[in-house]
Structure formats: structure tokens, C-alpha cells
Image 1 (cartoon, helix red, strand yellow):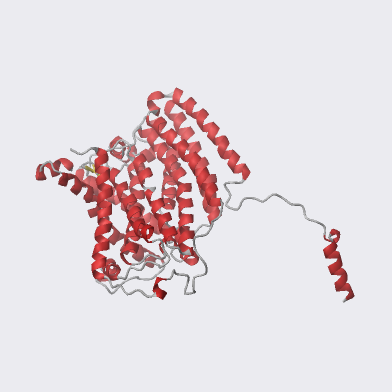
Image 2 (cartoon, chains in turn cyan, red):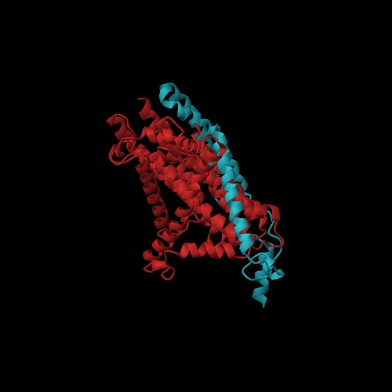
Length: 145
Length: 348
């Protein structure tokens, strides 16, 4: 007799076996004729420029961090939801406090602009053109010319 | 189902292996049908006819596609990380296939009757995120990497609305096991959770707007989880070629494709089991039973698969900032309101 999680393991194994089966079947049928042009990474027909293993936008990390906080919160909410109707008013008030704290967190992230893909930049006041010595000399040259 | 197999084969490990392989027998024909359905629906929506030459009205085209993919050369870029490149299709397919373990296909069959149920599905399908990231990173191709990063950011962002809308249904049904959830909704369509579940009438009427909202949000977030239009930025073909699977060809590409279609049904199956009564008949006792149960489950599931295809050919793709806006500033606050309201109605 197999436990329920043993069956889950069997599902994973069956899934892996299916992929193995498919790949072996295609390995028996397919040709294998590599040459350098075929093996270069696809870049719309151009010669690849540089490596693809580059640093990516910091936004992805911020999204991952926000996700982590809320996911942990959701994990805490699941057992609560499961016994919710048995516990009644006590569970409601307790979770209302918990959710309220998290909503404050969401509001904070929202106001800070971390939920926007393009984070709003701090406002930098513009310098008047006439005040810049470089600009003034450039315009003077244009006048003489 | 396991009892029946035990009677036939005796108590051996073979019983469980067959039990675990049964969803595969459903997924493969389903994928063939859906590939054809997608092409035909899109064609007819655009006033075309799609495949017409292979078989009657092109019904054999998916089979021809499989034969082609099997014979295709499998190239791995010279600069790729070859181990990760080979490992990625396994993770993606195992993640979506293991999700089917907790889906009740009928009153007689559920792969694994674990109490964690839908929570387990949410957890195990996250394997696909690792697989996608792995595929994108290992390819050493700019399109693949960007596609994979976008895909991971999108899936994790929409995991929150998905989990919260599942939570609303769990609060009403009081169980995570989808088989129990389905039994809870037995007895006709008015008992479905989307209509407030089998509760007293006043409670049902009060719950109705909130369950409807969370039902729609679960479906929207589900579409985003499987990277389909209008949330298909990871494989936006006009900007990223093919996204994370640009470098994959032949059977490895076919595995990614199959996993995507399996996920499309998995999302529909979760929506159907939680909110639309799973395998229960919409007419109470009429047309109920294990075989009819399977029929109803597949019929409801396929309806939502059709809905996803319909949406794909109707809506344009979102921008990245709109994507994040939808998830964090629209869906999540709405669900917090739903959770508070449902919680309040259930205790008062």
C-alpha cells in the first residue's frame, strides 16, 4: 500500500519517464548534422554580439522581494481559512488585525512606487539656461558667427 | 479507480503506476484536440479556414506536426550550458504533470487524495518557473534570457491573486482537498461556490457578488500564470522571437508546448473544481455518476480552454508596467476586500 505522497512521487516519475520516452524516440529518428552556423545562438540572422549572461534590471529583484513577503502571508492564511467556519468571530478579528498590518505594508510599497515598473524618479529642479556659463558662451559664439 | 485496478491486478506497485499514468492518457488526446481547436478557432475568428489538406478539414494536422517534431534535428547552441539546457524540459513538464495528481477527474478518480490538495497544486506548479528560468539562462541567448526573466516575474506576481482567490473558496468550503470541495458543491448548479455554495439563502445572496469577483480574478490570474495572451509577454513573438524556448527545437520544444497545453487545462480544472462544482452534474441527481462525472468535468474544463483561446484572439498584449499594475494594484486589493467581506458574512 502506497501513501498519498508516494502517489505524488509516482506522478513525478511518470512525468519524467514520459519526457525520457519522447526524447529517446526522437533520438532514434532524427538526423544529427551540426555545423558552426547552426550551433550559434539565434540573433535574427546576425552574428551574436557579446554574451547573453548579463546583469538584468534591478526591478526583477524588487518584484521577487515583494512576492516573497506576500507569499509568506498567504501561507499563514491557508490554515486559518481551513478552520475559519469553526472558529467564528475570534478568527475573523484576529485575522483582520493580521491583514490590516499587511495592508499597511502594501500601501507603503504602493506609495514608495515600488509596484510601478518604472519607479518614479526624484524631482530635480532645472537650471535656468542663462545661468550656465557654458551655454552663455555657446550662444555668444553663434551671435558672432 | 485504485480499488478497481487492485481487483484486476492484485496489490502490486503496477496498480499505482497505472493510476499515475491515467492523466497522461487524457492529456495527450486533449493536447491534439486543443492544438487543432486553437488553429481552427483563431482562423474562423479572422475569417480564414486554417488547415484543410491533411485529413477531413485538416483534423490530422496535429498528428503530422508530432511526426515532424519527432524527426527534427535537436540542436543545442555551442555556447549553452548543456546540462541545464537538457534538464529544463523535464522540470517544466514534471511540474505541470504532477499538478494533475490532486485534480479529481470524477468521483471515482483522483490521482492522490492528499489533504493539501489545491495548496499542493499551487506549490508544485512553481517547478515550472524554475524550469523556465533554467531554459532561458542555459540557452545563452538574449531573447531567451529576457523571456525567462519576464516569465518568472509575471508568474510570481500573479501567484498572489491566484492564492488569495483560492483562499476565498477555501473559506467557504472549509477544505483544501478538491475531491471534498467538489462533494461540498454536489446537488445542482445552485450549490456551486460561484453562487455562494450550499448555504442558507440570505448568506448565498450576500456572498454572491464577492464569490463572482474572486471567480473571475482566479480565471484572469490563471491565464497569466500559464503565460497566455493577453499576458504572453514572455513569448511575445514581435519583440522576443519565442521567449525562453527560442533555442529549443524538435522534441524538447514539443515538450514545452505540451506542458503549456497541459497547464491551460490545469488552470481550467482548478477553476472548475473550486468554483463550478467540478464533476458534479448541474442538474442535481440527473446525469450524475462516475462516468457522467468525468463527462461534466471535461465539458466544463474544455469550456474554459475555449474561453482562453477566445480571449487570446480577442485582446491585445499588455505592456510590462500594465501587467504589474493589474496584478498588484487591481486584483490584489479587490481580493483583500473579498476576503474581508466573505469572512464577515460567514461569521455573522
